[in-house]
Image (cartoon, rainbow, N blue to C red; front, side):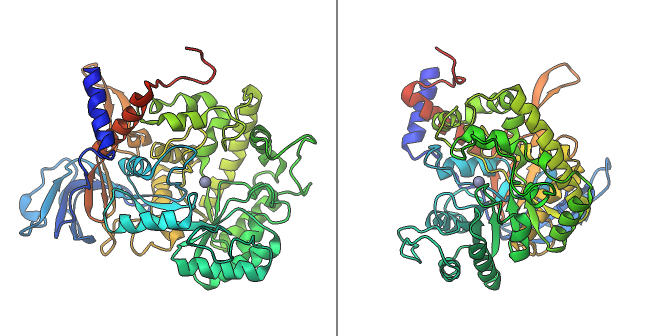
Amino acid sequence: MKQLTILFSLLFFISGHAQDNYLGDGPYSQLIIRGVTLINGDGSPPRGPIDIVVENNKIVSIEVVGYDGIPIKDEDRPKLKTGGHELDANGMYLLPGFIDMHGHIGGVAQGAEPEYVFKLWMAHGVTTVREPSGRGIDFALDLKNKSEKHEIVAPRIFAYTAFGQTSSTFNPLNDAPITTPEQARAWVRANAQRGADGIKFFGAEPEIMTAALDENKKLGLRSACHHAQLSVARWNVLNSARAGLTSMEHWYGLPEALFTDRTVQDYPLDYNYQNEQDRFEEAGKLWKQAAPPYSEHWNTVMNELIALDFTIDPTFNIYEASRDLQRARRAEWHEDYTLPSLWKFYGPSKISHGSYWHYWGTEQEIEWKQNFKLWMTFVNEYKNRGGRVTVGTDSGFIYQLYGFAYPRELELLREAGFHPLEVIRAATLNGAEALGWDDKIGSVQIGKLADFVIVEENPLANLKVLYGTGAIKLTDDNKVVRVGGVKYTIKDGIIYDAKRLLADVKAMVDAEKAKTNWKLKQPGVED
Ligand SMILES: [Zn+2]
């Protein structure tokens, strides 16, 4: 039996991964989704039963068809037209499609190819991704195009080019590094012409950042920045926001904007940024060097960022291994869904980015737990005062797996103090606003596109039902079962069976394992 399974897996692999070229079902001239409880992305409470009518890829009606616990009268429901399609989702929960504001489409070092990543995302209800251009703008634009035409199973892609990046076909400066404001402006114009949706910055000299952000804003494009420690002493988050940056990634550069009794991080004198353990260990002591919560400076900086309509995309999950390495390393989905190459990449390494476990122990984790508390306090209060917070994952590093990291990020926003409805809004409408697409996606509203997540359990009561592996439950008759996991992901009016996509991923992983008879092994454990 086992050998048969391996044989089949191999066959699937040889035939190009996808078991049968499954591209979802639809779009339909008319699609009626029947009997759902709607959890919208706008902060409104759940309401149902509701029938949602979609024509091609547009929501045309959202009809309340009854009352809780009362049988629905058929005559009160929207009518199916010829050629129309019904989806019976009676008793299920429907949410707007999820938006991941920080999604790398795999990576060469990780051995993670787009199909693997896309299916993991789509299996977790992620219908839109902002790609911070890890693999080049041409690579991202090609996939964006194929996704738009439904030639592949993939979320809608917003491609943000890494600032200064050149490639064989995108070469605005003949490979010269950007050293003058004029070059920065020229690069930004060429990037817009190329068709990119925005720019991902990592920090640069102040005059370069000023020029690039100004030019990008003039062109009406959006931007994101991971404020790398190398530049934050001269240019922190507040400088960026004032110059026109529209969103920040992670958290670096924010404590620096909050310093009151220093101007640089308290680096140990033998620190080396090229040493990943130095980098991540010292970062864990950074928030406590900033102004304390609710102090005058903390308030002033927060209020100015909010006044600038600045978006924070915290990506909490990608740092979680820092406060609990075992949790991230032993997550139950690694067994079936993590590729051998990815597992190898995650292991302790002086080279792989984020594989900083040279000697990670109790002391480092305790520092990070405190770091998280201060960081979460800032992000939750930012939300309370009207600031925009979004959901981003940054998977493919630090034991965080594509797709599975998404519900984890939702749980961490919950831990930060968000009401589950605020969590869902961060995942949907806030992301749409930050992308400048809130007139098309982000909530279930007449006229918007048909991007939905459908799940059998109530995700507000337990966000864990959004994990592909579901949530564990002991039933009334004493059986241990798994409930949840997204049932259907609908993107552009096309219905995808989320569990089938997950099965595809498992087949890909099995095929890779079969090649070398590979078994998942924890680091440092002998056979
Ligand atoms: Zn990233």
